[in-house]
Length: 272
Image 1: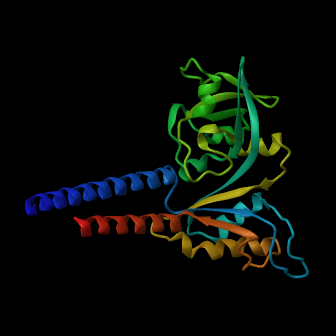
Image 2: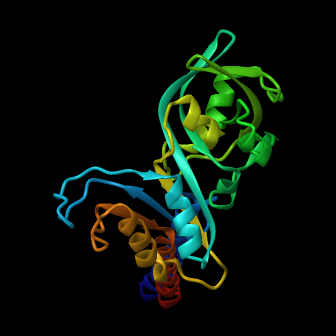
Image 3: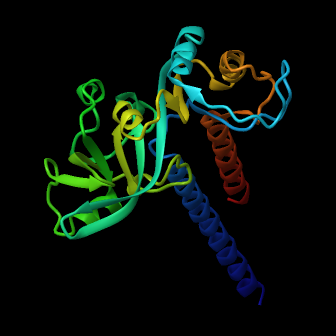
């Protein structure tokens, strides 16, 4: 009986160790997929209703960023490497022949690929000529591609209609949806030049979000308040109004992920 119980105990211990290792690896892969493509030192800033009164301005005031905010951040926060604007067009129907799909339109600059790296299956990402010449081109996500081109093949050079405007497909981004999405999942997105979107959708010089990355060795957490202060001063907002000027920092989430991994690894080592 003693031998049987010892054997059962050993088998149970081995089983629990395998479960912990497998579960830890599975959790690690899940979290890594949520961060896939995003730079570890990235931050995103966008406007919301103010929550504090400031210089005669009542709280609850809505405001919006513009092209000048991108320039201000570039000039006053030299520790940043990439500073690039984003526009969100919401859900729009894309049509190609008899096929259609409701996806999400985003207007970005070519630098966006340094913040969120695409996985190009066909063609290319947006380039500087697309931006400066306001070319009617688009990069489509995986689900958009599968629905508009069910027969597969390279769709680059073919035209798709988004609303009433025809765009030439220049690339297919097969990045999967993950836990961090802005303006829509990447596999359901249709990316067009930022400058073209400002003009096509009558956005003037509006900017819905600004994405940025820091230079190597610089922590984004150390720059958050400086970024918020730069924008606040230009729009008469209390620089301590963290809800009025939202800054999302991926560095903090990466730190939480790494700490969780260390805890799981320690637990596996302790049990083992």
